[in-house]
Amino acid sequence: MPLPQSALAPNAATTAPALSYRHTIDRGDVHRWAVSEVFLTDYADLTSDNYLAAAQLPPAHHYFGDHTGPAADAPDSMLLLECCRQAATCIAHRGLGVTRDSAFHVTDWTLELTGPTPPPVHGRPRELDIRAAVTRSRVRSGTVRAARYVLELSHGGETIGRCDISARYSPAEEAEIVRRYHRKSTPPQSSSLPAVPPGAPVPPAEVARRDPANVALADARRVAGGVAAVVAVPSGHRTHFDHPQDHYTAMILMEAARQAALLAAGTGVRITGYRSAFARFAELDAPVRVSAVRRRCEEVAVRFRQDGVVVSEITVGVSEDF
Image (tube, rainbow, N blue to C red; front, top):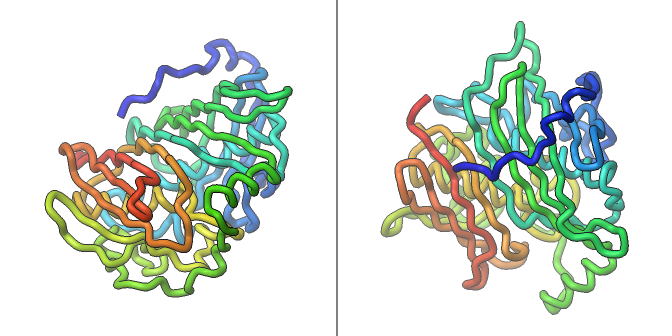
């Protein structure tokens, strides 16, 4: 799953400051309500287009640490992606001047895990370094309305992955008008979802989970060439719905894609990355149907449909080598 060539400035490291892992940054800069869901610990500008961020990976977490299987001791791919999301969100606010009340919409992102993560030093939590280059894709009247981020991840001085994120930003009033226009109604909030999603939940062990609350799929069945299921997330999930949402977020769809890929490929594989595109909002008030097909040994193609329309396509990289 190769990423685009890095856009990071080769000489930016000469003035790079030392970052701290002692405390988390302002939770508002990463769109979280609970401090326990904030992993970014520091941020710095290098140039107008290059940034640094630091994160501490929690040694235990009810969601990001809830895994079984051969890769259970490695950092969760969703946790690394969440750190990238938090870094890009922080850069948007602090570096690009995107206002706190703006609506953020991820259009696509890609994560490639390039190698095994070194073990933590003397049992301490892992510390993640993120080096980011930003391209302002769209600027209107001096305001950034879209940006592309290339992020390189390292731990203990070793590169462990790269992430590419594209996002759009809209003023809150504009976003609300557009949202209602396309829906023809006001979207419901995540609090309206049932505490226990309908349907038969997938057994946790089949998607490499321990806690049934972290299962994101229901009504799974084998179909020609793969598996089919429905997205099913409880309204009270402390990470997925840390704060109210009016749609299934990109991170929820990513988790559902990973679980669908494990159903299709088996829990004995290692996740090597993701390649994702988000065409439209996944609404909360209609079923989101998932299909997953293992196209090649190293990839599972996952597609999300709602009312017969594709809302997202995610390719999950898998490997049987450890």
